[in-house]
Image (cartoon, rainbow, N blue to C red; front, side, top):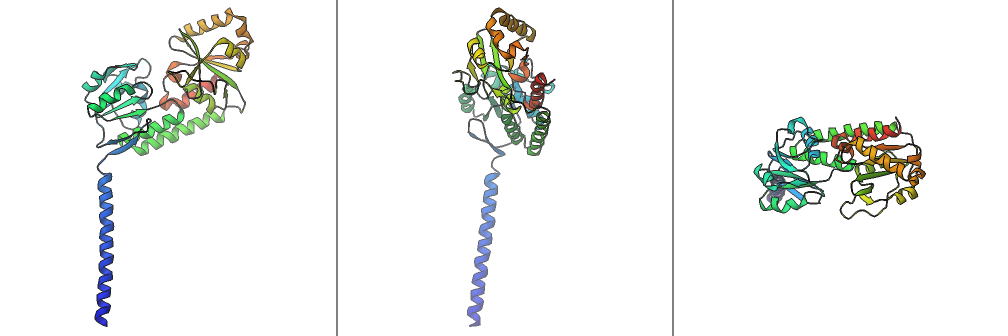
Length: 314
């Protein structure tokens, strides 16, 4: 009977040991599988991109990516030309062309191990990058939530997740500081974009539209059908502006602000119908700088929010 007891104990011990060994093996297998990639990143096209090692030769296709990437310990070997968003560390890096006309041969010449692509602008290059075995991630940086998400993605790329979280918390704190100083008033705003081809209006997905919403203002263009080639803007006309009659009018445009202001004021003066718009009649027309409101402000999103709020509440 004692023999049976000892045999039962020995069998139970063996089962326990095998279970422990199996558990350790499973953990080691999982660890090994996880360790095959430096990072797995879900980009803004919904793709899961596996980086086998920490990227050391990064090319960015938007100058707006340079500052947030550098803030989490990243560097680049190539970047597009830009007159407004070029931090000092990137000035001597290889150019890969204009942001709207990226030269793919120059990109390949940089021998990148990661290319960061601007969503809505450079996706046509993805097939060439893939054919050359170059990983890419597609990034959108229009809204404030976009920027926070991309800071976290860049922190994954550099392996500096704590730096990314610190940056996000700092931006949130600054944004809350701006919002605390803005009166809780319902302002109806329109954000028009002026070009040589005419006017369009910025929707909620645009940078200025996002900030207007953050500040608690109503964008009179919300819900309007977007342009085919720009989901963040809608066609606009004087008749629509008169009908919507916003309290405040913001203007964005590429080029010299003084020239744009003079052109807009001449247009307002030429047609008495413009003077029926409350914002124009009461002198609440404000011009937004392109470097903050047409190109992503990135880490300067709190500064852009402060700037826009300060125009209305000096």
